[in-house]
Structure formats: C-alpha cells, structure tokens
Length: 238
Image (tube, rainbow, N blue to C red; front, top):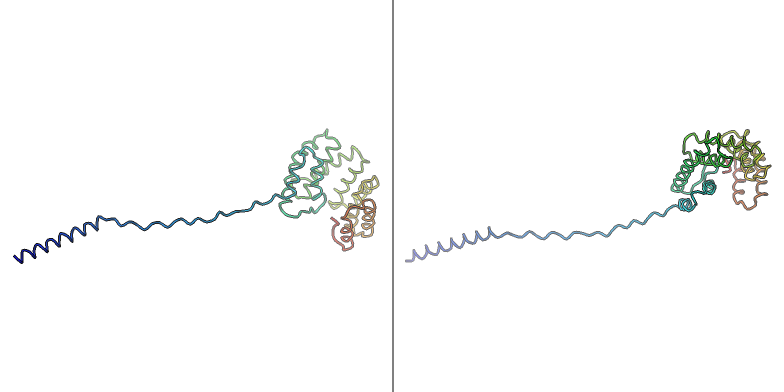
C-alpha cells in the first residue's frame, strides 16, 4: 500500500512538472519596451540678410536705364571696381549683365541715337571693369567712336572716349579728349586727367588737376585721399 502511494505521488509530481514546463513554453515573455525617441530641438538658422546694394538695385525703376547705370558707376565706373563684400559684387555683375542684354541690341543698331550709343558704351565699360561679358572693350570702343562722330564737341562723349583710351593704357592718346571735356565744363575729366598724368609719372600735373577739381567741386570728399595717392606714388587714384 505504501509503494502504491509513492508511485501515485511520483506520478502526480511528474504530471505537475510536465504541466509547469508546458506552461512556461507557451508563455511568451514580453520584450522590453523600446526607448522613447530623443527629440532634439529644431535647429534655427537665421536668414542671411540681403545685401544693401541688391536691395537698392531692386528698388530702381527697371525702365530708368540712366539711373541703373549711375548706380553701377558708383562701384565700377573706373578700374579697379570697389565692393565691400562678394555679395555686393555678385549683385552688380548680375545687374550689368542685364544692362548688356538690354542695351547691346539697341546700340548695335546703325540707327541708334547718340544717347543710346552712350548708354551702350557705359554698360560695356562697366562690364569691362567687372571682367564680365565678351569683347566688351572693342564693343565699347565702337559705340563711343560712333557717338563722337555724331557730336565731336560734346564734353561727355569726349570724356568717355578719353577714359576708354587712358584707362586702356593709352594715356597720351586719351589726354587731349579729357582736356577737351574739362574745357567744356565736364568737371570729372580733371580726375581722369590726374590719373592719366599719374600713370605717366607726371605727379605735379596730376596734383594740379586734382586741385582744380577740388576748386570746382569742393564737396567731393574723395579728393584728399586721391592727393595722398599721388604723393605716395600709388598706381591709381581710384
């Protein structure tokens, strides 16, 4: 009877063990919860402010060609051009390219007026000083020579032809035209004469032209620096 009870107990224990193992196998252990995603604060990149020159270009009436040329002339009227940063130069280059696109078809027309030829010349002169475009020097030369034939006595035309020659290396050839412009009342010609004389190593004549310009245009604050440039034997007054 004791043996029977022991067998019964062992059987019961085996059955319980088997049931326990089966339950463990059927029970799926839940995986650990995934970590919560890390949310980084948004990177705020401040907008780059538009260059003041680019803003000024956009503000000009696009049909006012003379105003657009005048603005570009503040930076690239003579060589080398002067810009405070690369973005300003990029804006100027884009503007001058647009002027070339607009004015070259007009000025290249055999029926172009004197005013249209001057505008075409100035645009190509600006492009030359900015080192953009192709054949800008020869194109500018063609326009200004045609304008000079139309009006040989015009002070502005003589001035620009003198600038083209003198700033292209022909200082001696350009001086007579600059003198003609100066005598005709185009005061800026005195500055170009000063620069041409400086290139020819005639410092006293350069200083005399600057002083004459200063007498005529006393409010131009650039003159003292130009006088210093001559005295310091710099290559240019610009």
